[in-house]
Image (cartoon, rainbow, N blue to C red; front, side, top):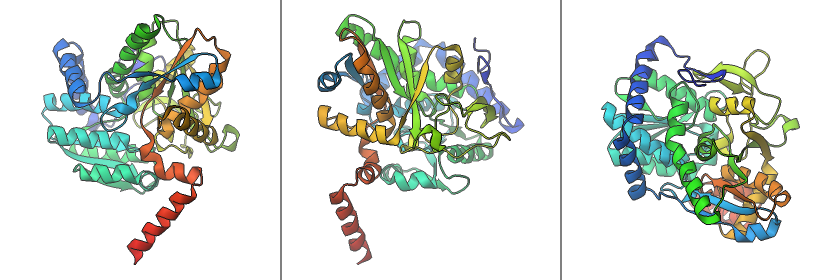
Amino acid sequence: MKNRGYYGNYGGAFLPEILVATFDELEQAFENIKTDPGFWNDYEALMSSYSCRPTPLTFAGNLTREFGGAKIYIKREDLNHTGAHKINNVMGQGLLVQQMGKKRVIAETGAGQHGVATATMAAKFGFDCTIYMGEVDVARQRPNVFWMEQLGATVVPVKTGTRILKDAINEAFRDWVSHMDTTHYVLGTACGPHPFPEMVAYFQSIIGTEARQQILAREGCLPKRVYACVGGGSNAMGLFSGFLDDPVELVGVEAGGKGITSGQHASRLSSKEASPGIAQGYKTYFLQDDDGQMRETHSISAGLDYVGVSPILSHMQDQGTARFESATDMEVVAALKLTLRKEGIIPALESAHAFARAFKEAPSLSPEDAIIINQSGRGDKDIFTVADAVNDPKWKEFIIGKAAEYNA
């Protein structure tokens, strides 16, 4: 049972004294909106008119025939405004920021989708906006950096630590400590101190609510399994939330990187290499050494390249209410390419982890069964990484040509 931000043994709010009053204010504001049906109505109306809700549930007939077994459905969060599920959370938090009367928002981002969504929300609501992004991720997600800046956000490359998502989170918290009276931190995933895990899952639950209604309308029954990639856990919690009380298997898929035995991965719950710890204001499973120092992680997808995981998912792992697997970089690229060719759909590299696992398991299920894969985002942001992974000669020629133009 959750007790002030705890899910079993995980969660909590481990805060410096200076931030306690700010978190108390945020928690009270969140409790107020949860009991106000008018707020959720306003939220749904905003998402309907500004984004693409409800997003479609697409039957993947060609992939179903390719693998045999279960009917494959795809929940199309890539069709949201800004191209990912991240907009669900940031627009909800944007409405909350308006109620609190703050004028500036900050955020961390890995793959850049949360950064773009936050910058979009800030532009719509008229907030000042600063985005923290690891220097490594800035380089591999340059298109998203471009759009954040065009939307009016200040993008700060983080050059400390391993220069990826966890370091961006650290810098965002440092900023918040200095500007908490005027600033709200739009945390992008279901991690961090309470109430962030619950709040992000609350706004993302719109995914699972819709998916449950849609599959019942299409099939007349619940799915056998649902699949979602797991970085911090926002899109997984979004999909899983719709089926928590149902006899549906919940499968989260983490970044297997170059293989679990290689040590170059970001598999917290699907490997035996993570252990409970406290960092970044909450308790969960972290990839850490015996001294509690965070290990380096690796994933072809920037959004899954994170050392921790949602405390809600950690509790679900311990309780056996969800199953966690991993997919390697090679499996992910293969799944992305197959989905492209068979369905004309371009999943983000993050989402492609869920596709890879679903493709492995679908053939073992009955043709009467249905499964749902949550496509958390679209893959155009990953063009540099994917082109390099598939060793596309025309893309290399294009890049070399452009570089020559700039150097001329």
